[in-house]
Length: 307
Ligand code: OAD
Image 1 (spheres, helix red, strand yellow):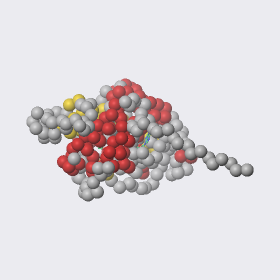
Image 2 (cartoon, helix red, strand yellow):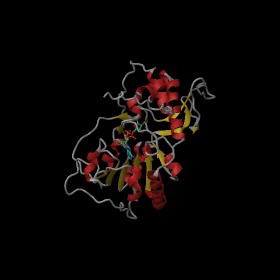
Image 3 (cartoon, helix red, strand yellow):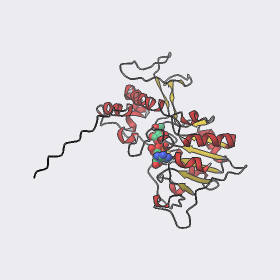
Image 4 (tube, helix red, strand yellow):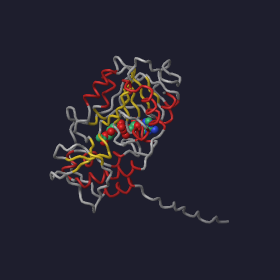
């Protein structure tokens, strides 16, 4: 007896997301000859990963290959005394549970786009239209995202600690503010702001999508309007305030950041001699050896339990 041949299952066509649509268009325009970026002295750049001794604390020993015996802490609220000053650095991972893609994960943005082609002064000079398409896509994705329990936990912590909390984010979305955080330093800029590339006009609110056939926006001075983002090779915003806050902190916590983009990746090394250093995220960051405690968990799941 012969069995009928199995029928091929055709999966229903998925509606491409804004990110996917842009990715397809972008891939067809890739130029193979863009120079690599050189690390600037104090500009944004991507460092190589570091290795070293790990002393990782996790509430899930199975998930952490590097836990030293005797180092495993039970999950409990982080103790913050009235004299403590807390510095929190957040990265893309804190918004991952809100549906905003990270940069270096399996579906990360830098798996599909080249930094040099969409996030550098060189890219802006070469193809501002492509740069605006990339940031328009990111505006579209971020505009429908809502804060997750990690953002709310940090907003609650601000209510408790007031100016003893310094919240510094590498994220350009506004999910910390949507969750209620009042004082947020956006060291890599803000997605929903633009500025002139030529005159000193201050950055302004701008949620427009600049996609063809729309004209590229221009300033009254004749300059080009660009996204208010710190690109690779540029100097991050508010660095002086950030360094003052790092110098004053007694607890430093990094959440959802891979520890490969400078200068943020070096903040923990700057404070580790005198501050307690804590990491939260599902994977070890490249600078894990500088942390005294690592909670290898998703931020939205663990932060509400830590504060
Ligand atoms: P990355 O994409 O490099 O790293 C994201 C980190 O978040 C990874 O370590 C993940 O393990 C972690 N992660 C993923 N899901 C998480 C979750 N649910 N909870 C907590 N952590 C989670 O992003 P960043 O380190 O933020 O700059 O990248 C730094 C900068 O590089 C960005 O600001 C951006 C980028 O290029 C510019 O574009 C200017």
